[in-house]
Length: 596
Ligand code: GLY
Image (cartoon, rainbow, N blue to C red):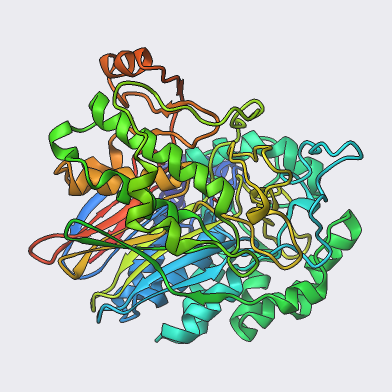
């Protein structure tokens, strides 16, 4: 640690000055070179952006706690959550503080300028969900991403100001706090303000990520702490403008974001760059409480997110379609199990494309889609002898290279209240637009709408009328924050970032525990596969499905595509003795757990 070294040397020099004055010539001989070296080291480390008062951290992936636990995407954020839980805050207090902290130290997905979903289960078993997904601005229109020939204009819904939906995060955080929070609001935001003001050290994976996106940041912005030549591990990032924005939220609640100075800065950013969001759009934004979608699977009850996310409905469908089969006897990732799961996924994602959208705007047939008889009928044409086929629709070049960036936190407090939150800017750093003067990234969530029926978005997902763009409508999500009960008691809290692969990651992680008897860290870290109807291929992580299994499935007509990694699960499990197993995913070097 160069900073510590230089601090020690300087300290040694000044303390020796106090005790040994007047210097002997030998002291001078030793001390002046030491002083020179120490100041040189200090200057060098300051030049690299390192500061003595900024804490270091390491990520911990799996731990068992006796009382309360949190799993999240970054050690500084989980540390904030642990601190709030230890000082008597409940799971919602911790969730509020962690979300603000993530907006500072996890900018690729933590956010003020995005949106998210909460699934909450109180200790008494009561369950609710909160939808704080972004909305299309009032000036948005169905064909806004199409050219004169009716073709989708590349990048318009992913990069820059037109890609931005009206942010929901701050309204959502305030709504959950007002309903369930117990500590003072300013106390929950203070740790994030300190992180922004004092700075924090970036990890290697963050440095890599930042370096990879500089070209886009430069296209969209003039200046930001996130812009520079080359970011290095341990470099300290100070975010003065973001700290000021957080103070406005600390003092005025969500009005500190949707009105006043922050709103002025957002609308100025929009007006000057061809964006659509107005002061009225911001003022009109509200988060919405909804009943969860629930599924029964053996002696488990799965509680998940209804539309505007497709996550809960699709997860319910997947579980309903595979439940009649004895997966445990078929075996983990055997050809038979993989084929069954892939065929269920094909059907669930086909339904997603046709029927799922914002239920405030479109009559999503949730009851029908999750009905046992419907799901059984859906699998009636399943044949273990050959691959099913997806409809023959041109799906473009498939998934874009941009990785899936969203993020998730799972929290259980000392009383047994459980929080499962997935939140996002959509792509890495969202639209890449940073609100000038306010210091935060804006989402590119408009890409989650179906810009044109049958044309895939950045996750290769297609959609139709249900997910067409309309003013004030929420774009369809795949986020699947989920809570699981076993025999009526809290059992698991889980969710993940990962775009379209979130749903199948939650599906597989649950089955790994419930059917294949894995411990939670085995279940989270097991390699995964994914099928989403279109493109008609099985995406496989390294080591997922063995070569023999792939050969068997290929002979039946399945096609494969290798991917480096898919969704990144963060999960908690209540063990039989009541202790809490917290697990972060090895797929993200910064995933971390904390608790006590
Ligand atoms: N933006 C990714 C999702 O909501 O599914």
